[in-house]
Image 1: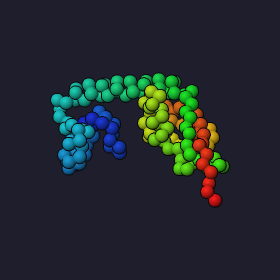
Image 2: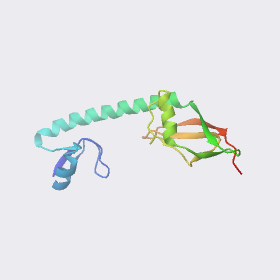
Image 3: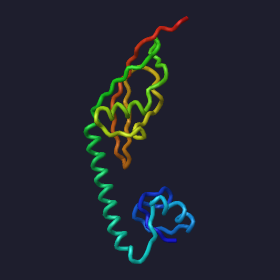
Image 4: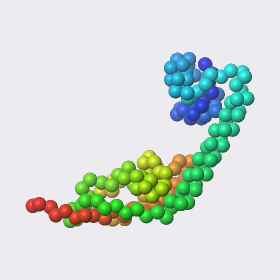
Length: 153
């Protein structure tokens, strides 16, 4: 069955592509989720129009990400976490906390964008990478300080 993809589908194609798939996959998965529409001869012009719209949306999203990277590149975040006397945190600083703090400051950053090489489990200053996709990345500084709790020994 030939279909026109409405969204990017992993291992199948990009939005606007005309692909052939098995009828069951189209009928039970792609069409109900509105990820695709059936291909007909009359829909060829519609495909071109939809591709142009999709490309325009992608370009706009790319421009927005580039603008966000320019705004966010000099951001410094500070966190205060509970830690022991040696500076080791009780728990760790998570990507969710970092993205939430960025959102509170007015930057639309999803937690999937924040990339940590290793968990942040000690106090100090860290360089955190943000990957917005399409080769667009940014780096922010995160400073973790501690509220010290004395251990009971």
